[in-house]
Amino acid sequence: MILGQRIRIDPNNVQATFFDRCAGTARFAFNWGLGLWQTQYEAGDRPSWVKLNGELNSIKAIEFPWMTELPWAVVNKALSDLGSAFTHFFRRVKQGTGKVGYPRFKSKKRTNPAFAVEGRALQFDGRKVKIPKLGWVRTRQDVRFPGKILSARFTKKAGHWYVSIQVKVADSYVYPHRCETQDAVGVAAVTNRYSTWEGGV
Image (cartoon, one colour):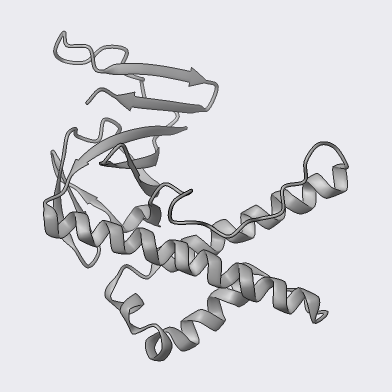
């Protein structure tokens, strides 16, 4: 069973700047990949996000050295998102229904700052989380589910940073319908094997 939780993060100024850099790098990598994808496709090649990721990894230390100061998965996940965008685009084209929605370049003004890292790279300890190449950052909540963290995506909304995680727990896990205190903490929605929980902040 996979459960989801969104947790608000309380970074200090240095940490918030690091998050902004990660989000900017993710946007740059997505746009870089989209531009190269279009060039390769027009030249008759069959691009893929995996090939693009390999090309970027081979040059980033020289052409984009600032990328090496951030978690490696920031770029990897951005190009993976690009691959998913094209997968959905080709599926809609094949179905021939509605707007096909060709992937667009991400604008700093139009796009909410966001980036992703490997879930297994995070380490939670109470109300703090350890992020690769950054260290420990305070959070507003503990992780409520015991299990393996599969994915972690950071987003900035209304000036606040959040991390959304998916946790794989045992099928025998009993979902907590109430918390230890009587305070309202959020809404839980459960559908078969997947659940999403969003805590109050």
